[in-house]
Length: 123
Image 1 (cartoon, rainbow, N blue to C red):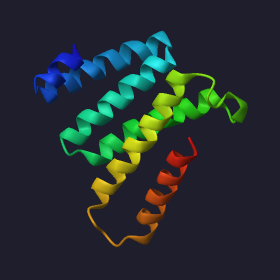
Image 2: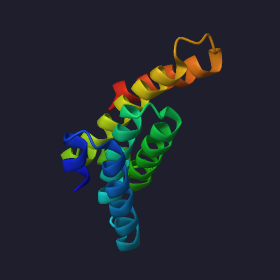
Image 3: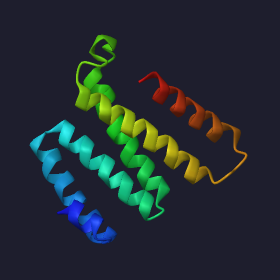
């Protein structure tokens, strides 16, 4: 339902639908579905220019993916769907950080962005 609203330009309705679905999936304990919904929420927040919220959603999604991996580097590349989401989340998080930074000269923020891009390139 959230996807339909999003495609039709109803960002607020899409946001509400995805938040509802996220709540259901959290209760069901389906981490990959939660991850996907967090990524979709991140996209909606970007469209609404809510960069802090977008970063929170994407960072949570990345945290779930890293938790699933649990530091096991041998798992890298074994699950193509998981790898797709790791790449997607890292790429979008770096993009949102750049948007949120808005050309600022903040050295710490620039360092975070460089680290994010470095992580993305490692995937």
